[in-house]
Each structure stands twice: as structure tokens, then as C-alpha cells.
Amino acid sequence: MTTSTHSPAPRRSLLQRVWPFTRHFAEMVLAMLVGMTLLDPLWKLVCALFGWTPGADLQAMVMAAEMTLSMSLWMRYRGHGWRDVTEMGAAMVLPFAVLLLPYWAGLISGGDLHTGGHVLMLVAMLALMLARRAAYTTHHEARPRSIAGVISRRWPSWIALAITVDNWVNPWVPAPWLLLLLSGAYLVIGLLRRELHDRRLLVMQLAAFAAYVVLAGVAMAVDATLMPYLVAAGWLAHSGWDILHHRLGKVVPKAYAEGCAVFDAVVGLTILILI
Image (tube, rainbow, N blue to C red; front, side):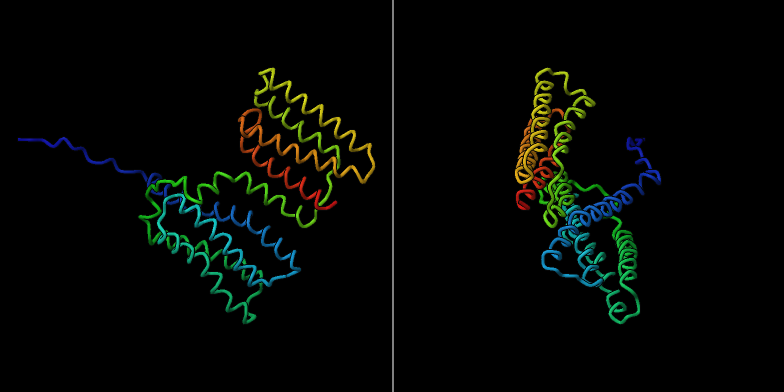
């Protein structure tokens, strides 16, 4: 008589069964919000450049496209096939498209179109996920070399670009004293992260801060026509400082250095455009 050496596979708890599904949904919603946050300012910039005020119907479809694009990139990064991506994209866009008919007929307002589209979109996404549970309850291998992987790794740059969209539309010259915050932030963050125990790093940060103290003082003292050039030079120079620290991986987190490099460069360039 032989006995089996195989033990039955342990049953997964309810949380273990539900968590992958919930995580998939949460990740997609977060990707949609990120896409809307990053792409919507670019859409508004285009409208402002052409002096165009789109209607609620076009705004709704553009917003749906922004969310669908970012969600699709994230799904591809997570290893989903094109069938999953296409179906989910349709589930996101169709609710808005369906509501266009009652909007054009005057039965609902623009606000109803946007609110109803978002609610129905989430319902449609959940319904599709339930219908295709196997695709959303299993682990997918990430694809770090895909386009989505490249985009996701550069998220500090995208956030910085989104924050500075208005600088291109309405460029302005920051007050000279703000230059002190650029270099001072590195000193404070470096001290809090205990990165400045190395005497060479500490001397480098103090020297940079002293240089910016001098630059800010000169910018406040010179003629108003020269001041913007000095301020722009300070912001652009600090963008290079950010890039250096990003390469070194010291003093500040690399994400902080990357985002600040883009932010500082945009501020400096838009000042030059203004003057």
C-alpha cells in the first residue's frame, strides 16, 4: 500500500484572492489620475495659444483620452496584452461617448456629462474586470524596457513639466531672494538626510550657498533691466547643479534632483523668453 506524498495546496484567504484584483483597479485609477494631471495642462496650453475655448463635449472626450492613454501605458508596463488594454480603453471612453447624445439633445448639462461619464467609466471598468477576472487576479511581469517603463521612471520630470506649464503661457521673473531657497534647500535636505558628514560635500554646499547669496544680493542691487538676466542665470545654473547631484546620487534624493532640474530649467528659460 502506497501513500501519496502530495499535500493539498493551501487555500488562499479571501484577502489573498481579492487583493490582486483590488490592486489592479487601484493602480489603473492612479495611472488615470496621473495622466489627467500631467496631460490636461498641456491641452489647456494648446487652447490658450490658439485662443480656443472648447465645449464641454470636447473637454470630456479629451479628458477620457488622457486617462485612457496613461492607463494603457501602465497596463502594458504591468504586462497586459493588447486585448486587455483595448477592452479597458473602450470601457473608459464609451461611457462618455454614450452621454454625448443626451448632452447634444439638451437633456443633461456639461457638468452632468463630466460627472456621469466618470461614474459610468468606473462602473464599466469594474464590470469588465469581473468578466475577465483571470486577467486581473494573476501576476503580470512588468516590462521595464517598454515605453511605459521609460515614462514611469521619468515621473519627476513629467510632474515638473506639468507644474511649470503656466510659465510658458504667463512667464514671470521670480524675486531675486528666491535664489537663496534653491541652494538653501540642498543644505537643509542634506543635513536632514545626514548626507553632509563628508567634509567635501559640506564645503561644496556651503560654497554654493555663499555664491547664491552674492548673486541674489547683486541681482537686488543692479538696475531693473539687468536683474532678470541674473535671476535667469541663477535658475539655469541651478538646473546644472541638480543634474550633477542626480548623477552623483548624493545630498538629495535622485527624484528630487531630477524634478528640480526640469523645474529650474523651465523657470530660467521662460524668464529669458519674457525679457
